[in-house]
Length: 117
Image (tube, rainbow, N blue to C red; front, side, top):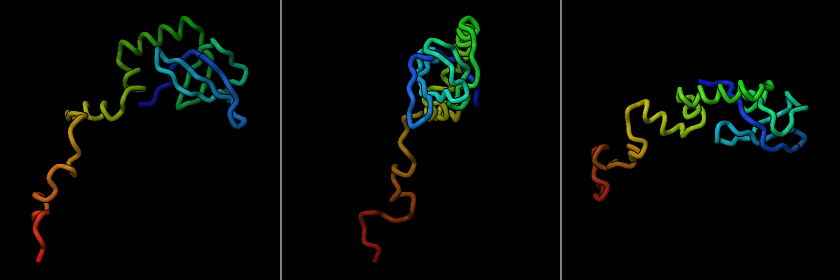
């Protein structure tokens, strides 16, 4: 799922002609493009969708939305470890070794230590 998430602008800079910002999403910091809101300022709350700030938001609404997202687990879903999340949803351990690394010689019908002749 891809959501528009509110965040607070912590810092701004122009990079290669593009206005960029460091934005805080309830403790998670991400780089965000501000080209759609060029008059944004440090301390402003913005709604971010796929890496672009698309709208300003008042502080109270932003904090309430972030709290709701946190309670629902949406922040972890959006910003957490996507590999671990996928493994959890699939019901497997995210620390399991890849299948290709586990005993390929036994599964392909011949012993890796023997000559094929």
